[in-house]
Length: 140
Image (tube, rainbow, N blue to C red):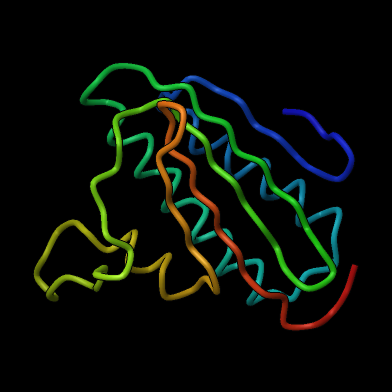
């Protein structure tokens, strides 16, 4: 993990402990910034869900290098994931919660619902995710 000009970074090769490292980085960022509890909780939920999806889908194709950048701005909290896994075959505009009895498929829908922006693109052989939660209060 590193901290450069206000950006906190985690770089790892996906493994079972990667999700714990993501939560640890989030905890460090939340300890450094006065964030509204709801903003922090919903942002952590979304960041963890996207991270878990990257980790889960990497298991079927071997190890994947993952990079997570976290940054807090006066009006928003932002996470940026980059990974060299297989392309995500998703349409973010078509994401919805599955039925009540489904055992899978809620993570992306939850992230879409709690974030103000969720973007995905494939470029340079990598997946790029951008997650933004607008802050409830305008604090630094």
